[in-house]
Length: 494
Image (tube, rainbow, N blue to C red; front, side):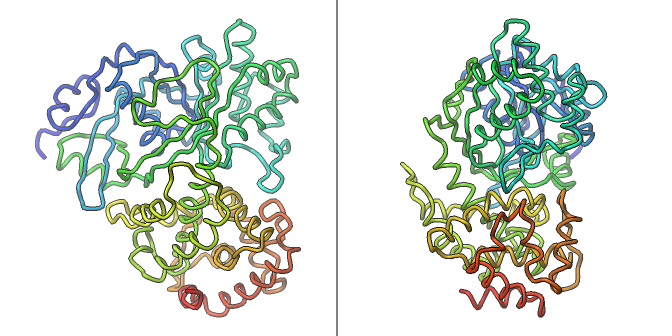
């Protein structure tokens, strides 16, 4: 489109004539929340809900300051600074409808890469009442098998010796909380928005474990004063690609260097447990409840585990996207049987939820042809995800005598996936995992020792000692390694 314009505050009035844009006084917003890990999901979810709140009931004390602690955060920092915190959210419906809108809830962005001071000071300032997190499962620094804090992490050891130069989220949080404690300010809330079961409890336990080693008096104050609400978050948010950027410029006339795409579905269930006040997110559709656990378990064991089922099996078969998997009837049938026979029987009672309707909605969302979520993104960091999404359910079914076949095949396929790194057509699979080298090393020992891959206790606990699981796993591994035809094996089970 001719006359395309750059997305920034000065151009916002003109842009508002083209697509929905903030109708509130952004210059009056203060950063009442700082958010660590400003990725696509945060911008499609919490930042969107905050934007929605501002439009419905302007609350100037609840703007967002983004925080980046890794070198990889430099780009999003630079883009959002250039665009005055503004970005375009592109909602893609299954019927092809596309709804772009400009989101204005992020008003600042600080990096803690070269110096920790800007981040620590921002967290510690009086206006800030919440530190929210999307740092991925791996960012919580716990052993996935034992749940214990990993004090062997070199960055953690560095922080214990030199608290003034933090590197991990725990070093930054304790440094900021110490400043607040010393200044007589109340503690802020730590609000996890990651896909971890009992995410608030995990954040609390890990922070206290760290703080007790670093400063026992501070740890006592944190334990007494600080709240860590559990939450369940949901919105499928694929990686932004060049076609999304081109769409905005060519069809809408807006130059946005890093828009976000997402599905129309969105959900946020939060435990109403805050240290120092909170936004009235319920005005924007957030559900506050006394206990989030049944809802987050439902989501983790159905949506997140279902995604991993499609991702691991789809990668080996050669499907590139999740909706591509859902165009294959074998994968659709397998997914539904996994959800019905493995996941549903171990869920808790869910007030107000029709599970069959929820599972139907998941299938519709996975099949959205306009989202095209890549299997490589879904499979990324499987070593951090699968213990919580899949292996925990598998263990519950073993304990109760329930179905284990469908999940066990995914574990066997994960071994093959980690070993070969190619699909059935010989095409390379993009594997993104902090443990990729270790996973490959163990998987490559499979021919000599069928159980080598599952003897990684930090991931699988004592599954390698469970006779029922070992027999099922061994049978599947031998069949997969025979010809790599995962689809044929899936078809024998459905």
